[in-house]
Image (tube, rainbow, N blue to C red; front, side, top):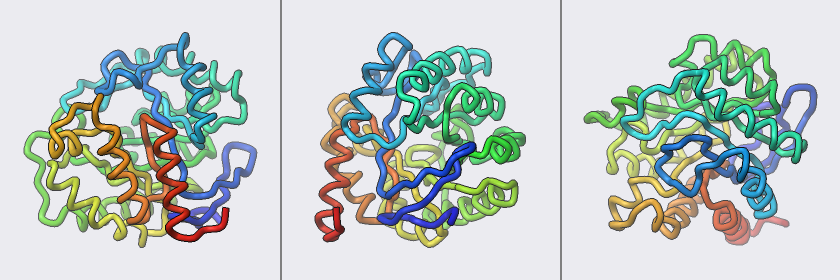
Length: 286
């Protein structure tokens, strides 16, 4: 049943003309087809993407998330044609070499989502939750793929300009409940939600949200978290993105214990180890 199977359960996703069984928690590997993503090691081109994908799949990645427009704080909007020129060759190459791999397109443009799915993508990951392009939800519905709706206060260009909340967990939960309903109403069968760590939130907001992550699980949709190497780690530990793997692993473990269903990460092997240890703590059958 669409929407069932959060946290440590299972689900069946409709992806175009097939049904795919998934078991949570899952790990999503990050591939940035951009020249300016905040973690340089995640940047890919057609020349090196297949090698990186092969390693991620061998390490246990269930999904590969490919983006062609930087969403780091202060980032200007990327032209759609530039975004497409970056992601389509990478997606097509991956789909040809690894046809069974689940590829997610990280975009808030409906046109990019449509062309990426045509090229071989299997999911749409939208930081705008359908609000930055009014065509996004109906487009994804016609594509017949799972959809991730993320919370963000503002836009990437100004989201870190003094973000304010009364109760960050309550406000993010309300927002995502509304976007979840909107996505289902548009005809999207399988919807995931993402609280948007680092998107229009201070460090304190991020940790308050992580501490209350279980509230999101009550919405009945799988919760995706993207904590990997972010400023919320570096601000506390005094590290840089290049030195934030240990902090990422610690926060990913906390997120799993709080009910996260998917970990979006730069480092697949370490995240998969978190999931294995999480199952061991729970006593889950292998």
